[in-house]
Image 1: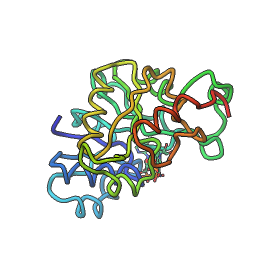
Image 2: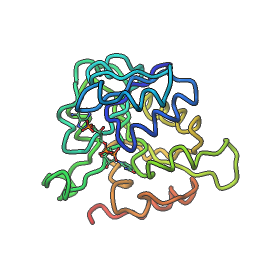
Image 3: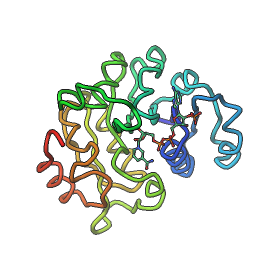
Image 4: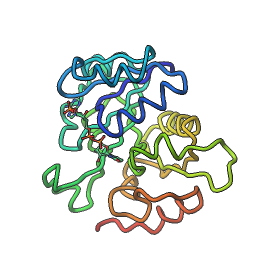
Length: 213
Ligand SMILES: NC(=O)c1ccc[n+]([C@@H]2O[C@H](COP(=O)([O-])OP(=O)(O)OC[C@H]3O[C@@H](n4cnc5c(N)ncnc54)[C@H](OP(=O)(O)O)[C@@H]3O)[C@@H](O)[C@H]2O)c1
């Protein structure tokens, strides 16, 4: 992977971009309003970055991060993401996103719905349970005692393995939850959500998560 496509340039998208350029990746980043509105961010990120439309970011990325409000997930372009690993940071806030009955009833997961929308892609959950500012602040080298851990889940082992490698480069251990059908364990309001925890603590928090809140 040399180029990271990013769809969504808000709190999380911009932070992932900052860390990725620091690590030497090229970044193609997009939002809903158009590339010209990202001039300041791209100036800050430097020559490894460029702004684009969402479709261009999807096409340019070897791997693509989708980090938009959940309610917008159906607008993500499916065709250019076919065959690619897509890292999904989304969380469901019905107050912001409107009610989705299957999520309210505990019959679906946010990343599972994105995977259904992107049938040709390999969706993996990632970076959904860490505050944006901590993405650049909390990483430490592998082997650091009590290193912070983040969870991933995917129906494609290639995708979860890629997220684990990226997490390690960003400074985090990984706990692999398994398939997307289990990814509710790290969704909003569960014990593992947006708290600092090492791998053992994260695994324990995932195990005791209730299916519905
Ligand atoms: N904030 C956190 O600490 C945090 C932590 C973990 C997970 N998350 C989750 O990650 C997701 C993103 O959160 P955020 O806080 O980064 O949101 P945010 O600051 O509101 O940024 C959202 C970004 O998505 C873009 N966007 C919206 N619709 C789009 C579309 N159809 N195509 C392309 N770009 C689109 C917006 O573009 P415009 O500005 O042009 O509208 C904006 O750049 C959410 O699901 C959130 O729950 C957030």
